[in-house]
Image (cartoon, rainbow, N blue to C red; front, side):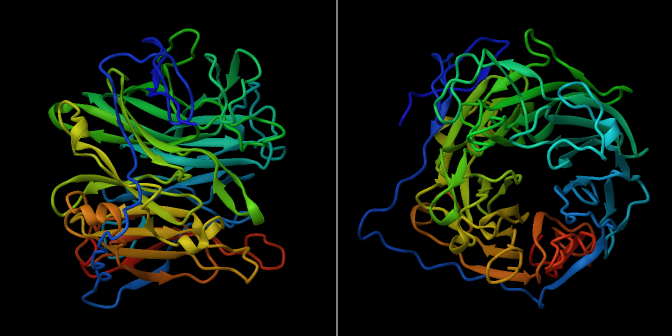
Length: 533
């Protein structure tokens, strides 16, 4: 069903209207833009010559275990996130917080090989420092649901970092979603916030169109976060909450209205994060027009303007034959980071977007662009963002270049299976190469399927070429293949002229008989000798 134009709303400023799957009240002025996805090309449209795969001056060198993360988690070591701060990468040794906790690990990549950081210290996250929605401390010996897991990371300064931790699942009461604030230099936890706060439903339906039970719902499933510096040492932290319906019959497949919590940050304070309360909200809260917000990304625009992109994944469910399929529309919503006013929305279609950070950058022609991954279809989508980087948003300079009808294929033959999860994306600094990591599939009927890293050659102008906008499929080169180990997020960018340029999280191995972890995760590196920068 096609709903009226809608905007996300800021509860402190009054209600606006919504779309991307749900109805909202009449919107405020000026009207935010809506960029729709392109349709399929008509008959007889010329198909352009594909760009050849990237060429390399020497054969790329892949090191699957360039830096071991050290811990073998019981049910497998799967590091959840990889972020860069200067010449240091931060990740976790494994996402599961077990009896001895989980470590946030800083890795120095300023040399020819990654090494343990001497500037930053590991930070240990313990279950006992967490708090569930009933106010009780976490207990690794009696975990909620499947246990406690670290999700996204963000580093704001030498002394302030953030981590999201969630526990429980679609049938767990109480639930747990925490924001952990830590000091990367000291390796200490500074603050812990309970994100599982109740908010009004505002009469909004769930993703199946049904009314939520009661006038409020409890937020759950913290999925993404982003720090935006504003004035001096102050800024804001945005936290995306997916908000699942707990219990049957959906067991998490149905989503409540999506929200983004907003916190004040003072980087020089001993308690850096503070609520920005607007009763009845514990902190200022945005509602997304679509369902399942999973990532937030900063856009530093001209004239000091600051904006954020919110990846609203949409829902998915199991279709015929047990394959995952999109069950609702996906969109990307944008807000002003200062006023929190909604600025517009990109409607991509039914894409089941992944929680991976988008690949934000500039193509070789100078256009600002962003690539977004699907978690189930083995495909990638492209937005043109020039107008968002202007001091005043220019609605005629933004567009969905590749949407549901004309996606960029990564591994579409694996659609609906774990291999269809595009786990990481990054754009080279020259805009000529898109690097993507395919998750892999350890439990495939034919045996473990490898995770893969792909390097895609891109045309110089991703926006102006109308053939690319409609039918062009870029050439691709598989830069590496792992053997039975899945892949996660990746980062592109060399800190040393003779060092690797691509850094990828590699999960630890599993036993084929017990499916228990048999080794630690690692940071893998790909050296392309200057081809990908």
